[in-house]
Every structure is written in structure tokens, then in C-alpha cells.
Image 1 (cartoon, rainbow, N blue to C red):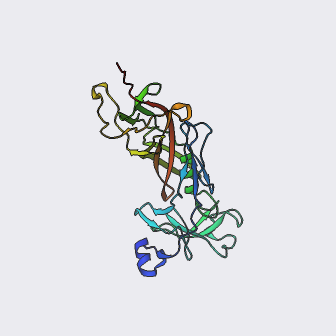
Image 2 (image 1 turned 90 degrees about the vertical axis):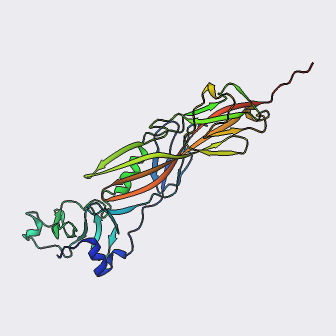
Image 3 (image 1 turned 60 degrees about the vertical axis):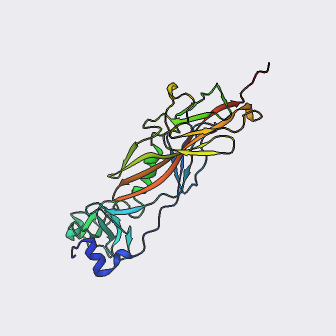
Length: 298
């Protein structure tokens, strides 16, 4: 078989603009209380855990792409004339299979594995015997599935909340509230996890892109990691993530505001000639009591 770079193949035959193989179904990601995210393929994202703190959900589909790792270019996962992409070749079962004794069997007998036509941009053999289908072909090891498992094992939590006034103390209407995340690899990233199967290793790397604070009074604040409060700041506003309540927490559940911090984790995965991105979230909660300044009359 004539060996040509994939770029040349695209120019001469147009095959690389053929339809991609069916995409992997949406991936639901669930982060239980203070634990690693869990991924269920074809399952929509759900709330995890039963307690009000450190819960998480997954959102959006995982994006699957096939990549020629030698040239670092994206390629279709399937081409009708060439077969399925499995780094770094396209494979298609030879039909009919060679007769017994053909050198293509490499000493094996028909029925012991199979012989494949291969198109390899790196000048690999055009005919290859395989004991099992190449990874990513005909239901064998799928890098996207390994990515789902890697995300499931990621050591990530909801934000480690820092807040002033501190829980247990009472804040005052109109006074500054400071909000921040005590950052660590588990609460901010980068968090990294790898999974290996069938000779393929997929690595997922996650980091927080933003934190949305639901202040419990119907308002939200979107921030980065925030700035830890120091006593020297006095009654100043936070320079990066703050809030001022306009009402007291009296009359609410427990006469407090339930403040929920939800971190959005951006996850990039790669391996087995594929790469993709997905998003998951992790949440934590604290209670804040807010009152009014008491003025003593004479």
C-alpha cells in the first residue's frame, strides 16, 4: 500500500472530510460529598450525595476527537475506505481473510486473531496480524471510556470555603462579606489521574475555572479563588470576591443564610490517539447569620 501523510491523503482523495464515527454518548459526572467524581456514560448528570455540603454534578457532553499523535493533527475516527483509527493507523479487517499458510498470518492459523489492512502515516506495515482488534475498533478498548474512568477517580472536592464573618458569628446588614476558596489540588487543581487498559493510558487533568456563590438571599456572586481575609483589612471590601447583604437572615431556615459555593472544574483528557474536554462541578455549603446593628436609646 502506498504510504502518504494524512495531509496529502486529504488533498488527493478528500477522505478526511468524511463523516466522523458516531460520537460517544453524553457523559454524566457526579461528585459525591467530599469525594472523587463518578462518571456514568449515557447517564445525565445528577446531584450526588444526600447531605447539603460538598455535592457536585456533571454537565454537558464529553467531546471526543481522534488525533494523529505523530503529526499532532485531528483526524476522523472512522473512514469508510480505511476503517477505524487506532494510534497511529487506520485498521480494517481484510476481507476475505488470507488462506492458511499465508505470510500475513505470521505463523498463526485462521481463526486465531485476524489479519487487518492498515493505513499508517508513519510507514507502518500495510498488512498486520492482530490477536485482538486494535484499541478503539469494534468495541475494544475505547480511550473515551478510559477517560470517563480517569475522571471518576480524580481527587477533587467542592471548595474549601473561607468566609468572613465566620460561621457561628453574626454579620451585619450592609457590612462587607469576604468569600474565598482555600486552594489546594483537591479544591482548585490541577488534579491529575491516569487509567491504563489494553496498552492504552489516558490521563485526565482538571482545574477550577470559576466559583459561583449562591448567597442564600436570591443573589449570586461569580469569582475566582477569592482573597483570604486579614484582620488588618478591617471593614474594607474584598478586592476579588465579596458581597453585602441588604436584609437579615431572620425568618429563614434556622434564621441563617445557606451559602453554597459551586466550583466549575474544566477537565482535559488525552491518550490512545484521542483527546477531549468535559466539565464537572463540586459544591460546598456554610451557614451565615446576618443581623442588624442594634442602637441603644437613652
